[in-house]
Amino acid sequence: MNNLYQKDSSDKIWHDFNNKYSSLNNIIKIEELNKYPNYKKFITDNLFFFLNNEKVKCLKNFTKILYNSAIKDFNLEIYLKLLSISINEVERSENKSKLIIGLGTGRCGSTSLSYLLSMQKDTFSFHEHPPIISWSNDTNIVDFHIKRFNILLNYFDYVIDIAHWWLPYVEKIININPESIFVCLKRDKMQTVSSFLKIKGNGQKGTINHWINHDNKFWRYNVWDKTYPKFVANNIDDAISQYWENYYLISSEIEKKYPKNFKIFYTKDLSTKEGQLNILNFCGYNEPLTNLNIKKNVGTVKDGAFELNELFKIFNER
Image (cartoon, rainbow, N blue to C red):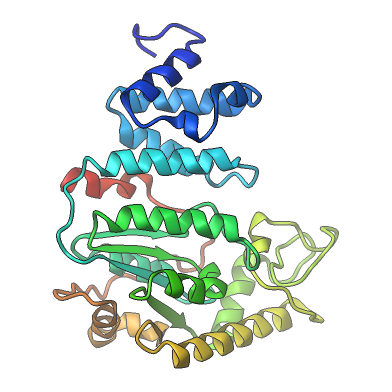
């Protein structure tokens, strides 16, 4: 910190921020925040960056902490407040904005889809934005993301979020945002199973199996376990197969019910100009940009990975 603040000046930083911007005291009182010294230090250290015209650095750090499964609710609300303040300084879009959700089982081309959509004009895109979402009954975190979408939709023509975990919440989002679009990627079942097995450990002891309930003795616990449904299966191959079948059964039912909002595309569509244009036209892009060199995340595990340097690039471009 510079000479504006002395050591242990967290209270002063909090006070100065509340005087300059909308009050965070409406989210959590400083007396209550004092009960969580580690959170307090993190928050006030980053409020210091915010106060000193390093808003992007502050938001990047808050985005990182959202991966912490033990994150407190007040961190979520403070993040939303900081995002709202930051984006208020960006030129407002005059066009009608659109929310686009990408989904699929995983290992189906979602990273490549994210790259394709991020190329498009006036688009704010993120792949697996934290906090991660449980497959069922995660209303609080889903509501956080919907609030985040709504902030971004006020200022950007297209807001994108891509993750497999959105499927159980599609109808909730459509009910809130009837114009929202869902692009669901579908890869061949055996190819999907094989790809998952390759990166999760091929069913060996101590490896990952997201798709069954386990006691952490044979399979290794992983924080992403909660983002997948669970099945009764004799082996991991069977569990992943059931997951694939269940995922696209649900997807097909949603596509029939909401054909204007939800459409299944095949992974191979990403490999042709015609296929990419079909996806981009469904998303509503008037001047779509294609790129046949977008094959990403092949044979790697990048759950939740993202390029922080690219995250807020759009703030500097507008």
